[in-house]
Image (tube, rainbow, N blue to C red; front, side, top):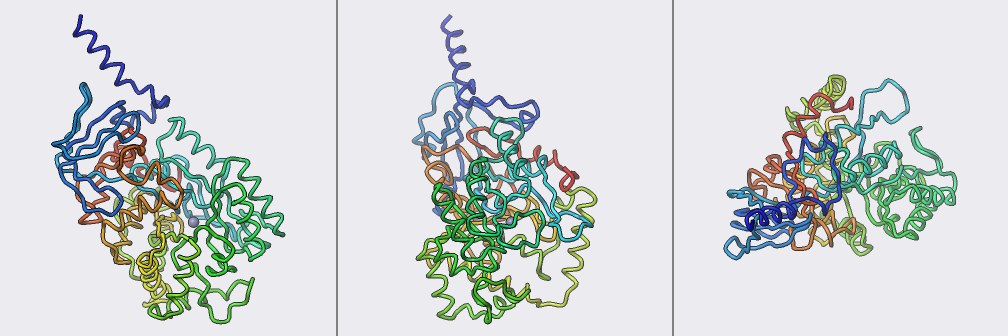
Length: 480
Ligand SMILES: [Zn+2]
């Protein structure tokens, strides 16, 4: 009798009633662990705060949250719980990636339009598979689809990361892309912000065609609703945006038009002049330091997105085989053709030079105390995919910028959480935070490319099999 009672109790406590998520049969295919309480022992713990990795650590999770973290020897293991001996595998926080999209650059013969394809099937899976437990969709092309993807993930209908939704791009009087609304006046831009906030979007991104009055109206409208706004600007310089109250700027320093010599206020610089000016910039100069200090003083964050820009350089490495195999045939053709054409240019090109300078500026910004975050931006030449591109963006923080692996991990976890104001709940492995954890068969604190060896991705305490998620999209990316 007593034995039966214990068994019933154990059963009750292992029922995932807390989560209140009824996962679909499809999502369940990828879930390996979904216990109310779980114990991981013998972990090499990377906390996300930049501290050295600690061996022999126990992490106890309960009801989707981290309940206890400490030495194996001091752990009090609750009875009847599943214990996973990690046998020296690394555990680190889930990635918080800030420049993601639900679309990819795709082949198209339609002129003028941004050649994009929404990928509601493969991209959420790829993000989660790679360990991105939280992403910000930094600019929407199919807003109602983005809203639905987030809802479907939160309901357990499809597997995917937690999503911080960014509204459709805020453009100015004229846009080069027909998919974007032209806001002819500052009032129109404010109304645009309010409309999308009403639809459920919780962050904003201003785009290249906004001028200062339009940007000011958009910033004020977003801030009035306590929402954040970032930008990929061109008419407005970084210094001007900082003065207007911008929260964040995308693409590291590659989108900065501050150093174009004859740039006119409230006008685009000449095509290609910004990249040229960056390539020729003297990074050691006082004007660069003052420029960066000003951004830090004004509390403007910067998102590095080197993976997509690497695709514009002649120095880029050959593609990773798994990423190419993930692509659908037409996506693969489109990408490989563009890759050959970019790589065959005679270097160093303006892009090659700008890329190197931009990496040095990101490092300087971080070292001077700026909040540097990282994102993927799966656009460009079509080779930067969700998932694989997340890894590449983080590797480049080490390879190109010169950060230590521990710094790169902090940028990709805690810093992302801070930028989203989610750092009370995600971004590090600490008691009370969401159990967003990666189990890695390697040591990314020593060798950053070991993030590619992620085995299980825990999101709110639910453990997904990374390999199965990757396999489910093989040959489909770009088509679904
Ligand atoms: Zn983007």
